[in-house]
Amino acid sequence: MNTLVLIPCRLSATRLPGKPLLKINGLSMISHVFNKAKDANLGEVFVATEDQEIFDEVKKNGGQAIMTSNEHKTGTDRIYEAIKKLDMKNIELIMNLQGDEPLMDVEDIKNLNQRMINSNSDIGTLASKITEKKRYQDTNIVKVTTEKSLDESFFPSAVNFSRKINQINKNIYHHLGIYCYRLKALESFVSFEQSANEIKEKLEQLRALDNNIKINVALAKSAPIGVDTQEDFIAIKKIMEYKSK
Image (cartoon, rainbow, N blue to C red; front, side):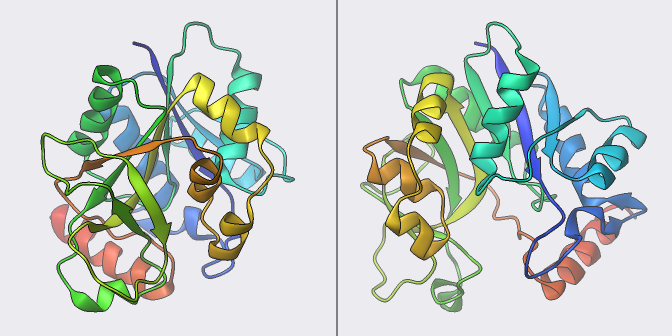
């Protein structure tokens, strides 16, 4: 089954403007994510962006990039434009990696791709166990509630995604910034208007659930920090610089 990997990326993040170009070990964050995607060896990898600076940065570091409109409300809408522009034949799965998770584990990316190949799921994603109670209240950490407990053999459906959890139960996990779509499911997703829940929570995956598109969740081995704030960036920079020594 042929997979295309796309990384939607833009400069105008509200909480940490310009974050894709921030340098870690002399390389921009978006280039680190691109390299992770290449290391997974699933298929062609492209960064989809509205910003010439990101396009130039990726190309300068040996990556592939494609320019997209600045009108998109979500990353998923952006990658769909990229797919149409690239017009690649025989693509059945689209892996959507977030440009602000440079610590995503390559084995987790491969595992999600394999789960999608082995199942008939419309959309697949990853989640990890929450080990600190304060994370339930952290609105920068997206939580997913699943119909069954996650373990290495299950690929259960997501019941809900939210930023803040008031009541803790055993089937709530830390959602990671990665999706794998079957092409037909992605086409359905982008055909719908943004849902009220999606707009309220600022979580595009709720558009899928609100329109009866199933999202299945696999357990990730690691729980990488996403970069939403300056503090996140400093923490990730320290980890990656330590690992490179």
